[in-house]
Amino acid sequence: MSLLDTLGSLLGSQSQQQGGGQAQLLAAAMEFVNNQPGGLSGLIQKFQQGGLGDVVQSWVGNGENQPVSADQIHSVLGSDAVAGLAQKVGLQPDQVGGLLAQVLPHVVNAGTPNGEVPAGGQINAESVLGTLGGLASLFGGGNKQA
Image (cartoon, rainbow, N blue to C red; front, side):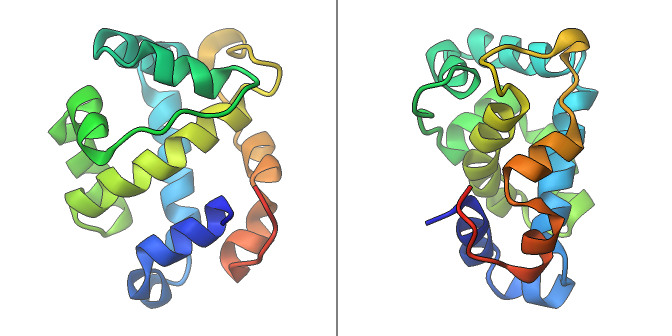
């Protein structure tokens, strides 16, 4: 199942009600990463401090992404950050934690195409969206594999 299919099934009827729910969450996740102190580097540091350094490094590296749970996301990012994202995309915090657990590995992986954090720690949204199938398939729910 592609990232977009996963997002679609997790968002369910909520995304149909909101139209662009998938794209909105993906955009919010990228903005969240870039707004961390230090950007992507800061996010990586949070995961390392939270005992998930190996997990986040798998997302940066060129190998398979290790999974992360919603509880781990809440623990590393903090409930306030998750609640803020939930409010931004119009979902409940428990839903956002699960969605972030699915989305963040792909966002970080796509934002580090050569296994390296970009200079300045900022991920390029256009590059990430292109890697993850583009905006057209986000809004159309296409079957393109991520």
